[in-house]
Image 1 (cartoon, rainbow, N blue to C red):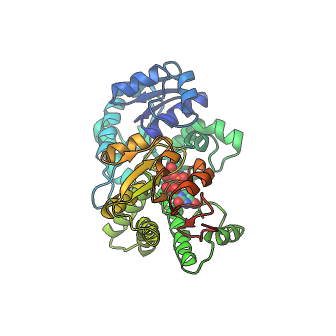
Image 2: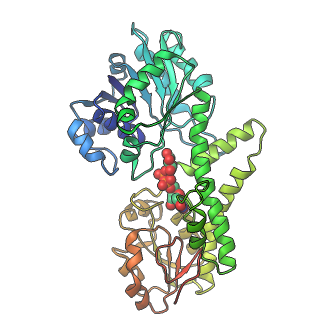
Image 3: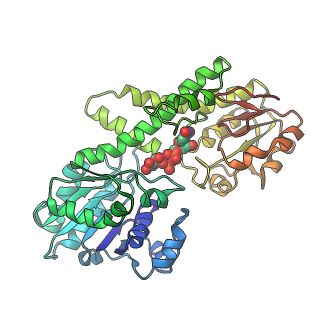
Length: 431
Ligand code: UDX
């Protein structure tokens, strides 16, 4: 099948390369010529493990990129994978998606045979039917459900494992208005995956498919905030939250994953998606208290980490090491990283900050140019009066000698990676 993907960001590039690997001919459409050239030169425009080999094999051949939306008319199905940033009030900004839908509508206006448009981006319930479909109809002069189809197929990709998550999904969610042609076309797109992994294909309505994405992320973010709430109680009573988490994770109604308590969640999705669905609920006059509490607990964790540091060292004028800047290990992405409020809090305390991250230091230097960045964890700790661990990079689990060499080894672990030191939700085993 000939698939087109509009948007070559983290999701668009990943799904385009993976669709090619499934055997489809793929056309990526993006307004950024540097991205287009990179893909056609066989170079992945974003860093994602496993993506480089795919783009180097298929780029410029089975996977071609272009800035020309007209190329869409030669394809059978178009995935809209454009950004949906958030407004200050948390609601999503669908303007880029709307512009993309208009361009896709114009591109299929003169097409005679059936075309399927699939919303891949995360949009609040109702967006596809109430906003995007009318734009597609007016721009194409066609009737949705007759001349072309509109479906919703949310992604559940995690940064750092996006290719694996695409190739071995736990589910494929397909939202349509019951249009058999749309279901058949999406079934053909994903057939290789379904056959190989017997993946459940969950067919539902388009509003349900939009909501499933938000519910999935809201549930995961809330699970982490709940274990952080439990972890904070544990900390007050000298209980090891990780022992508690391991035991309750044995209950298959809870599950062992996403029970790692610590300084909280960041990234481009949890914060944006929780804020968007909370605002969408409020727009309908409902106050989603559980989701609001999940965000509130998350927002509180960085200050709890710094309060623990305050218990051991007055940071004012002291050299404090911040170990870990990325929002999670395995990526250089600092979007909504918990290191940002931690650095802000240390600056408010008058600390002399020395920061280290294996890959994200240059990203953070763009945000905080005025602080020092070390080349290694050891260099960051050398001469430091205290240290906070924010990202659970594996290398931070083998720093005992460096910690012990500190003048006064005050180390507060915002995750559970340095064991012997004080943890945000567990007691240090020894000092
Ligand atoms: C998430 C969802 O997992 C994915 O399905 C969705 O498509 C996009 O958003 P991502 O944001 O890449 O993926 O990262 P994820 O691995 O989910 O972690 C999110 C945040 O939660 C990170 O800051 C991580 O440190 C934190 N986290 C995760 C915890 O604090 N504890 C945990 O147990 C798990």
